[in-house]
Length: 186
Image 1 (cartoon, one colour):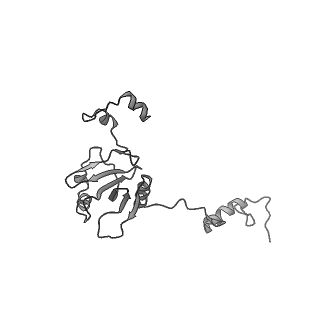
Image 2 (tube, rainbow, N blue to C red):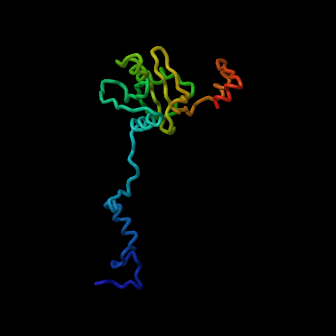
Image 3 (cartoon, one colour):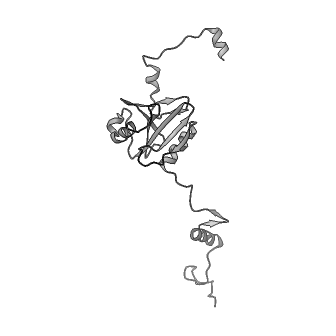
């Protein structure tokens, strides 16, 4: 038995059916797919290690995941004549431009320095903050640390790169090239 639709409000009418397009939305919400495609979920989330791998591959490296939990690094980057052990870390708050990384993250720096790897394997600490979508890379050397501001071979540029300081640096020299050589280079 169907109730009359003429005088009744749609919300009180038992025979009222929602429009077809709203039923489709409801079924998608319940079943999660149409024609084998998942329409509710967005792209799969990536871990910080996956993002580091993607960044390393963009710079031309091959990425090897560290499967040994006893070693305190996340992956090895391999390229012609270069091997780098990388430890990645995601922090909540921004790191200052003039940070001394040994005092800010002493455990990570110590762990990278004490890795049982040969001396020719470089060590890097990659920091990523919650709000910044860029990596800050630090070389971890036996006696000191250094932030990598830019590397043209890898097409890497730190977002905190202080270009004006580099342009006015006292150790910068310009090598004069004779006009003949300059034309040959072009």
